[in-house]
Image (cartoon, rainbow, N blue to C red):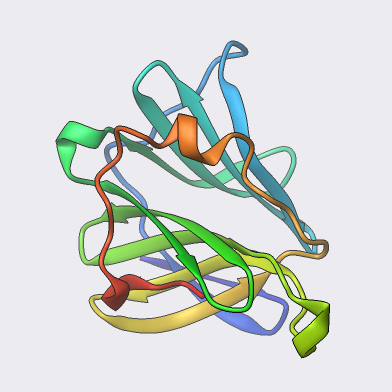
Length: 153
């Protein structure tokens, strides 16, 4: 296990098997910057890939497939629509989320990534700018629905 510090937070990243590199035909479903780091979610066929790292180097890459039980999705509504995708690797969950705000109640839009170990949140990083998922409903329709115990928001 290695530890990287991003925006003053320590994010645990687990290295090892299952890393995948998506090719140029992948659909970009989510992308944001968190300081010098970058988070991407792409899709190629039925395979989804989560990447965390710098623009030039991936520090964490997880390939998720609906039938493999290592990717989940959830849509909720609180002050506005909220969407998230959770990739799992061992006891860790990497949850990419986007939550639209509601100016009438003072809630701002946020997006980012939350890292959990089991059911405990160990880090949450917010994107520099709000980012939405591209085509969430269509892209993740075959992905199993997650439980609220793994909410990244």
